[in-house]
Image 1 (cartoon, protein in one colour):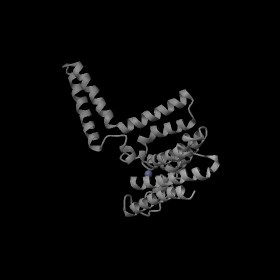
Image 2 (cartoon, rainbow, N blue to C red):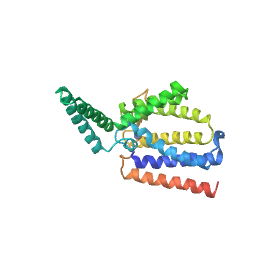
Image 3 (cartoon, protein in one colour):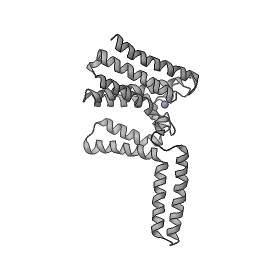
Image 4 (tube, rainbow, N blue to C red):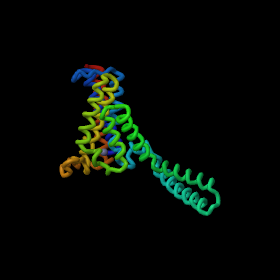
Length: 250
Ligand SMILES: [Zn+2]
C-alpha cells in the first residue's frame, strides 16, 4: 500500500478509536475533544511511520532532501574533499584545504540527512533513558530509530512482534498520563496497526520476526493501483461517517 491508502486507513482507525473513547470510555480511558483530535493526528503519523524503514517512502522524504539534491550533495562532497585534501597534501594552503574539507563533510551530511536525523533522534531517546530515567519505551524506540537506516524495508519494523512491544510500551507509558498523552499514544498505536493491516493486502505482505516463514500476504491488489484508490476513498468516507454518526447519534 502507498501513502494514499495508508493515510486513509490510519484516519479511519484513528477516528474509530477517538469516537469509541469519547462515547464509551473503554478501560476507563476518557479523552476530551482535544484528545480526540490529537488521537486522529497521531494515528495519521503512526500510519505512515513504519515506512521510515524505506529510503524513499513519504515518511522518509519528510526528513531528507529530494533525490536530485541528494545526488548533487554527494557529488559536491566528493569534489570538495578531493580538492581540500589535494591542497593540503601539495602544501598549497592548509586553511583553504580545511575549509573545503569542512564543506565536503557538510555536503556529505546533507546527502545523508535521513540517516543523521534518525540516529540523532534515537541517541536522544537512549540518552533520556540512560541519564534521565525515561520509560523503557524510550530505550525501545531509541534502538528502533538507530537501526532504521540499516534494516531492510518491511523487515523488523514491519513485524507484528515489533508492533506488539511498541503497543505495550506506548500503552503503559500513556497510562501514567491519562488525557492528552494517553490519547496520543493510543492514536499512534492504532495508526501503526492500520499500516500493518494495509500492507497485508499487497503482494509482499508482512511476516513474523521469529518465524519468517509465517507470512500474511493477501495479494489482493498492487501498490498504488485502482483498487487501492477505491479502498482509500471508502476509508475516507467511513471516517467521515463515523464522525457524523458521533455528532448526530451518540
Ligand atoms: Zn509498509
